[in-house]
Amino acid sequence: MTTPTPSTPASSDDAVRAFRVPAVDIFENDDEFLLVTDLPGVEQEAVELELEQGELTLFARREVPREGDSLALHRTLGDFRRVFRIPDRVDATRVQAQLDDGVLKIHLPKAEQLKPRRIAVTAS
Image 1: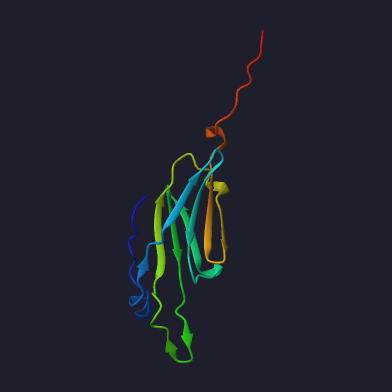
Image 2: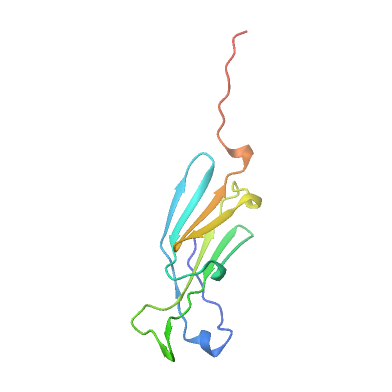
């Protein structure tokens, strides 16, 4: 896994935003790798995932809470960004992600030819 590199801000509003690196739990079983991360305050529409050239980039934009004309100052602000190096044995065509109550789960299925398989032993 690699560390994130913030991109150049697109506007002056983005210039004050910082990227946060979300903590991620990574699990593996015979069928897939599973990445689980908390993205508090992030809506589904604000999550972007891109898998390109063996790297999975997670970007999530968290909107700043407002009360009338005031911005929330007590809350830690910032968007989330993290980049992962994905092994060749992941089937990129079957990657899925779901966001439920601020928890993002990314399912990275293993390629069928690389999954462990049981070989039947027969008598001759």
